[in-house]
Amino acid sequence: MANNSDVALPEALKNFVFDLHDSVTLSQITEEQAKLYETDFRELSSKYFSNQPWPAPESIASECNGDPFFLALYREMTHRHWHQVSRPTLRDRVDGWQVYRELFEEMLETTSFFVLPSWIFDILNEFVYQFQGFCQVRSALYATARKQGLVGADGSLQPAQGNHPSNLIENLTVLKNSTDAWDIESVYGYLNRLGKLGWPKEGSSSKISPTLTYLSIFVSVSRSRLECLLGDYIGSLQALNPLTKHADFVVEKDDNSTVIEVLNSVFGARLSVSYHAGVSLLMLRRHKDAIKTIGVMCTVMQRGFKTGRLRKLPGWDQFNKQFDRMLALLAILQHVCPTQGILDDHLVRLIREKHASRLETATSYEEWFQSPKFVSVDPNVPFFRQQVQHFLQEIDPAMSNLELRSYLKLYTSLPVEKLAKFHDKSLEDFMPRLLSFKLRTLQLEQTGDSESYLEGAWKVALDIHYYMTGSMVHIDEAEKQRRFENYFVAQIAQSSEVCKDARAIKLAV
Image 1 (spheres, rainbow, N blue to C red):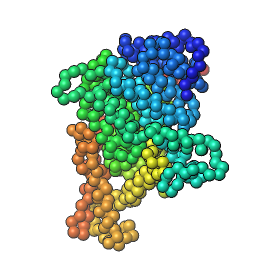
Image 2 (cartoon, helix red, strand yellow):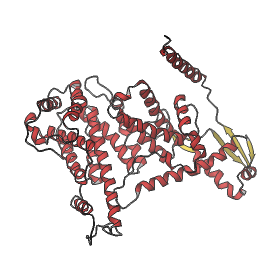
Image 3 (cartoon, helix red, strand yellow):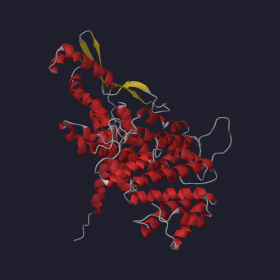
Image 4 (cartoon, rainbow, N blue to C red):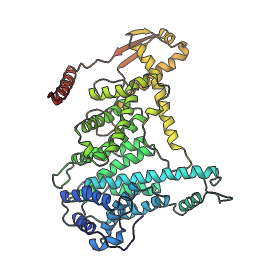
């Protein structure tokens, strides 16, 4: 990947490396490093390296006195850039593992350095992304090799016999010689070790480096994403526990922000938490909590797009795509678990405009499952398809129960036999469905004093509650919260928009 040419480096590049090294090791000034990393690096990449890799670490070593930690940091940053502007080969992906191993080992041994929160998040986010990409490429490679007879029934690689594509044989050889690359235990190992560095220890009053705390914060975010990708939804929520446990811990740097304030200062991290926690809650059949988690983030994004704030952030087009994915998830969640007063009225209107009519007539709900690209550590397992099937197994009964809910909302009480006839079923066949609906409406829901996504109280998630006495079903409709102020505020906002458009009309003839 790296460019090892000995040609003279541009003066601007030398100055950039020198200044960035100084900001990491000596000056440690936030504003200075923010400009170098978030502005200057992108400008230099666009000007000199839009379609080629940055110079190798050895080429710029003289500008940082050969500092091994900074060289590892530089190597990761430029490797990440090359992944973004090229189509990485399998060899590039294997090399990526060595890049992160080198950097993380240096981080575990070095304490006197400063790296921005956004930079730390980018490193850890890319680490999980490249693990995900490696697993996907490996699974696709195994699928092709299986068709060519190069993978046995037990998943083991077989000797090549006959004519096979040369690139296939070459890639299988790379995998065979790199069995330790992106090993899941090693991936977890680095995240666990890095995640323990920055949290306060009981009985210790020693100060903690801000960068180590940033590492711990964004390791939790990355762990949550990784667990979700691997289908461990409880693990995905558990990974966020340190953030709530240490929410008020103050990071002693510049404005002395708390852990939650640091997390919220990096929009990509905040989005990652909401999306992957929301998907995990959905897959755990905690629909109401999933609506709250995803809905809050969608409201923030909707306002950010409207004001133009999000369009100023790097990668805002990806945020736009993620917003559409989360809207689709909210549409299916609202359809399965109708709620009132949780989502912002503007968001409800947008969901209705984009998805309501299609959802009402849909025969399959797979297209609304805008899930992350699940991966498996076993390349022989079609893991993504398994998770989609799991989603459909949860959603299909919920959809069929909407008809039952519509009948229950028409009555305060009625005989079970009558309700069974509405569904063209015998009493014996209908009772399991009635009881199943009762069970499915009871879901774990976070309360105001919950310190974890895994804590809460069991509540009825729908807007009705019913029970049986003898052969009668009794229905209590949940009390509706009349939010008159929401209506008036929405009308005021709409009127303000109309007036704004009217004032913009040029009346001169």
